[in-house]
Image (cartoon, rainbow, N blue to C red):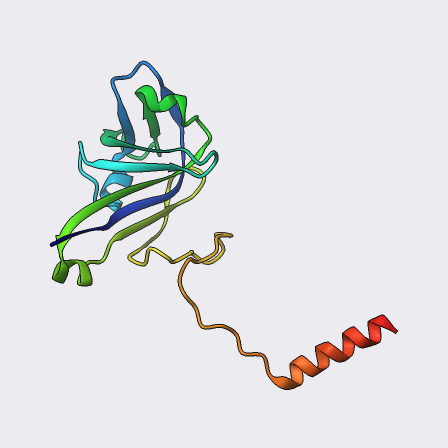
Length: 158
């Protein structure tokens, strides 16, 4: 059995251009393609954080160092310049590879410059304002803290 797993993602990139009359695809700065291990022609899902649209297309290389994220063709009806998007590539792998594979997770700034590289798809870089999707241990509140909070509520009612 093959499993379809996250291979790589570029998280919260800013769309810089949209061209309805282009043949199709998404244009991605070569620096970002390399950071995310994306190849020309590789299939990606695009999730528009701004409006919730989701679509699939393929990657074409954009000029290195420009930060270009260009939405081409019919997708330009759904995704506009200035929208925040997540580009996601999936890979199919057998069970053993899926259990050990480390995806490429790329976070960018407002100019689509790489600010964080990692392999944890649930990681939120410090200072990003994002919340981690990772499972964390619940905070244990002591009985003393509970009693103090209850006393404060009772005092506030009186």
